[in-house]
Image 1: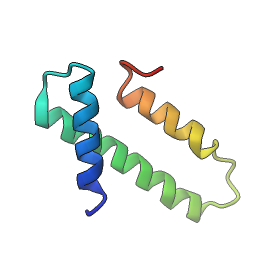
Image 2 (image 1 turned 120 degrees about the vertical axis):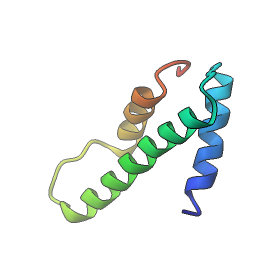
Image 3 (image 1 turned 180 degrees about the vertical axis):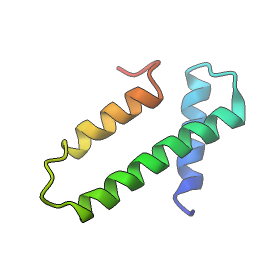
Image 4 (image 1 turned 60 degrees about the horizontal axis):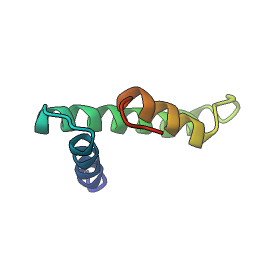
Length: 73
């Protein structure tokens, strides 16, 4: 969980910057979504090396856009 705390702090700061008023609960939920999605991607990448996954940078951009759709450019 060492990496979860810095991710949570980053997400909380981003949500504050976007004007999110839902506070700590929203930060934890968004961080959990990112955390689970990234771990799923990492696991499947190793388990299914033959599968044609999207580029990591594209996957990350799309994931962030889905979880934090406001304020991205």
